[in-house]
View 1 (tube, helix red, strand yellow):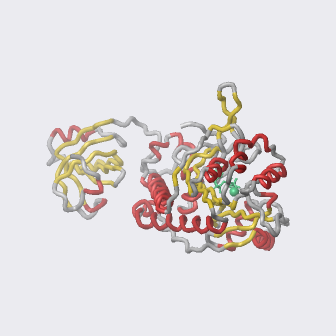
View 2: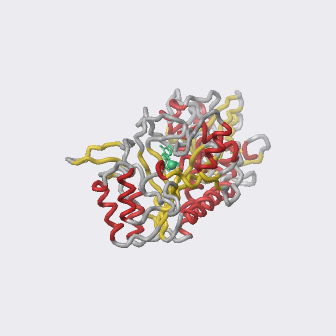
View 3: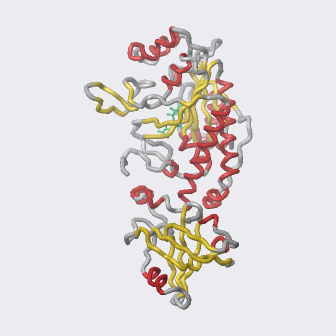
Length: 429
Ligand code: ATP
Ligand code: MG
């Protein structure tokens, strides 16, 4: 029976493994193979003097990245990876890899991002690349564990929609029979409707589609959003959930991803909670002090400002109390100063990770705010209706999964954190 390569130890007597041929080195009398599966790498040594002729025959022209089955005695050997090797008495090529390979898995020459994504299946065979996705898996596991444990209900909302969440032009139109339809940019309106349905705490982890023309290292046209919405809660309550979830993710990655982190050569510190909170006005003050720009109240924080503030803060932090004018209509304005709203962004020193707010739950105020954004309440009737029949106060946020992984692992490009990136120029593979 095949066993995972990690489970073959220097004390194992006999092992049968199946994996990909990572490297072949022919030293005349001895041929060394490194065989890899998702759990690790093992050396297989064929001695032309000692091995059976069937083994020598099979070993002769095994190409790199073929899938092979190897069975044989195991012995401890200091110099080999994991301190053990197999001396095979059986080798079988199960699936041969053609040559040349589309990509070098052993990566003596680092390939361009485009070449890598074109042959992503093979790129992900690199332990340093699969490590990113094992970490992402641990992060997503921690998030759903955290939310299920606290009584959140997992929901799935439609991605084919008739109206924009926030208006604007960032929507992909799709051919939907005789109707106009779009890919949804956010589950926002639907998760809020589930507050009217009485679900109290919901979460959704799913795709969001943004037709922004940008082609940056931190934007995708299809991203994964982790969204929550909570009834009888305000912006402070959901900020606490957010910082706790970030810490839980880092803890789970530290606890379960020793090997992937070693491949990546990184050991992220678990961020301390609570995260510092600064208001938008304070953020402006920092940005204006540190960069040669005159950002006025009501301006968006550009990339340079975000970086300057991030440099000063040096850790995860929240920006709170945003001008109502630059946050979406569903963000709740303060009663004492409606120019400012109970909206927040969670920031990593490098970039924004999440946006959230206490929401407007009063129908008439919501209609006014939709109008003040130049949008028409009529096109939001399906969303507004629940607000007329008992909508509890509520708050929530959306957190980008790729940016979370990217910042945790200090990746230079968000495309590293997604298996099959969708950007301005790419819709395959
Ligand atoms: P930015 O200003 O950085 O473009 P945003 O404010 O438009 O982001 P939101 O609509 O607030 O984004 O979405 C919430 C979160 O979802 C963001 O903080 C981010 O982590 C993630 N996100 C949004 N758009 C993208 C995208 N195009 N690519 C990757 N992640 C995204
Ligand atoms: Mg945002």
